[in-house]
Length: 444
Image (tube, rainbow, N blue to C red; front, side, top):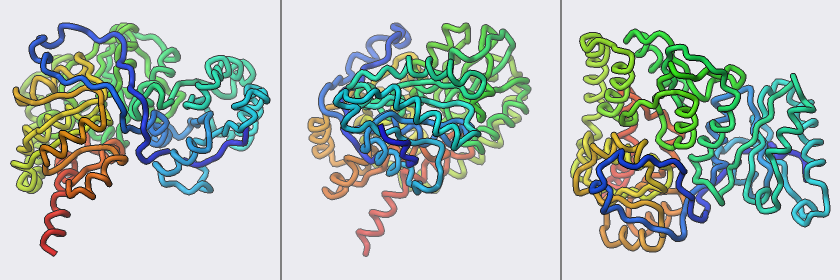
């Protein structure tokens, strides 16, 4: 095993089918709403879960993410983040060499040595995540035992956690779900009344949400993941969970098992979704309607004004959403209801009926939904429909552009601050931009 490759992961890699999360709650939606969903299983074009490190390491500056993988994993991370290798980012790759893969070297012994060298070099690290990859899982390297062993050796100095970011098991946004799940056993127990926002947000967006909730009179608002990995929020019967991201199925259910209550709401994309999302919290904490309207109405009006110039570009345009980020259903709801786009097909890597219930209920009745992916079959439907815009992963964007079909990269939506009424205009602009660019090119 070679020394940590301090780089940063990928542009469009293929991965096998992702297994849906366990614990899907039946009966959340009427069965006839879901009976026409097209379920596909075949070749997929998605990022792997390692990609989530790119936004998680920015969120928690006192944490370090050490991928145990190959040179391909290292190059993947570096390409996705675009950070120079000498910039000392807060993640790296312990590269498995040929001797490790062939079983000729003791990978655990080498990993212990590398971790100690890393901590001597980076004494500011307070939480170390050992992140599994396809290579480490293929050779059955038990990172859970490695984390346990290192926690004993490094007791009081650093906390070591592990989770899987392997493309064998995850799409790229599920990496965050696995990382948060690894942190949950460390959360203290408390029945204190609080609102817990779950899912990584840009700091400025989170600050804005906290200010709004403070003005609504909600006394205690915390976040998971926290801005410091050692300042973990408590959880218990008084916790009301509001998901900021739609790809946190396992984390949501684990919090419920700890006694927390999961609030049902559309996700905070666009004006309508953001207002309803905050209304769910207001209802849970008995905020008077007059106070809620006084706080939210100016934000809603400003958000709608910001949307208008982009709506003029998007209205009437036909949109095809390929499965990639698990954000497709809330985005389709926003683009259909607030931007006037026509939904040709809405694909998602997997459909969690409970977490998507509020957004599904707001989609147009005749919307075609697909779960899973068979790339060839979906591309045939895209070519047959000739939509004005396709939301897809990077691996499919360039081929579709070459065929004259405008695309929007789905991964850009994960990295961009798109949550909340204040960001509704920016979110719509991300979709209007490729259409404006294509119109300019056609005129030139």
